[in-house]
Image (cartoon, rainbow, N blue to C red; front, side):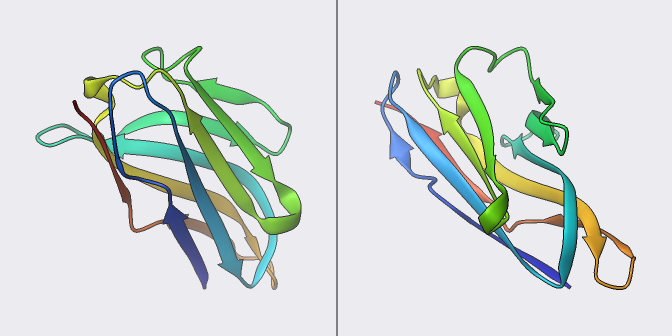
Length: 120
């Protein structure tokens, strides 16, 4: 069993910054991918940024050069630094983590979501 706890979402003005955090806990042996997705009202969930164990990153075109994903392996925590926020970034942001549990089974877990609202 893996639990993901997200934090950092709030109301921010256009042009502002936020940092989201997602901490994974449980019987985790290793993590090979961590990422952030978002879902705006009436839209499908979409990938925002992903980070693999090989430090490869992948960003949605709409957030490139504004958002940065990073990871603290010692804390099993992934961060999303969001700068120059726009109203269209408003969404519920979800953390996703993939890896292996002790015993060898895979896991693919989602956080509960954190609301980011960009508005003046």
